[in-house]
Length: 212
Image (tube, rainbow, N blue to C red; front, side):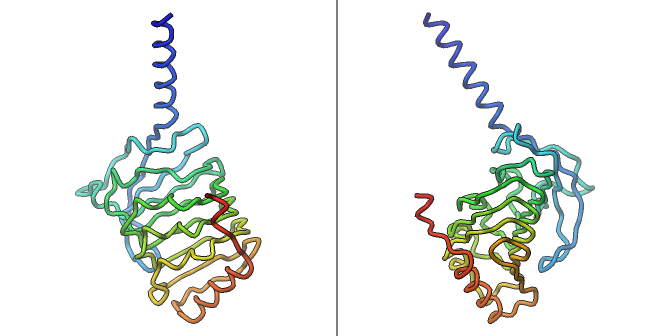
């Protein structure tokens, strides 16, 4: 009986390890993006609900003379099959400044999804099923100057989402084509950005106590 129990525990632990493990297949290359210019990036796709949430392995062939330390951007596309933000990228890419997820099934950002990217300047979540954003999302990423949440289903945005950021340094803020708001600022105009933030608070109110 004891051996049977130990065997079952082993199977459960192995199953958890498999379902929690995520291998990223990177297609490496250079790309020019707004506010950052040319970046060396990992582009990946085909991450689905059957994949784990923790990145435990990265494969792919770097361009000549490049390695993981040169990667400053991660771009993810998922064909609306990815319901979460993968974690642990920084273990492999310690110098990430840009992070992008497109065509995902993510509905809620609880606030800790990008904490590992302390040097992040550029965040782009486009065409995903996002409805709710916590105030805590930018607490660990004060250097952000580019924010894009366009083409989604946003209805609720935490009141203090932008509080950790230096609003005068923001260059681009977009919440275009969402349920509660359709507005963007692409010229770094601080007055206009503050107006957009106030519009978010008015039209997309959200009390973060919902998560507590």
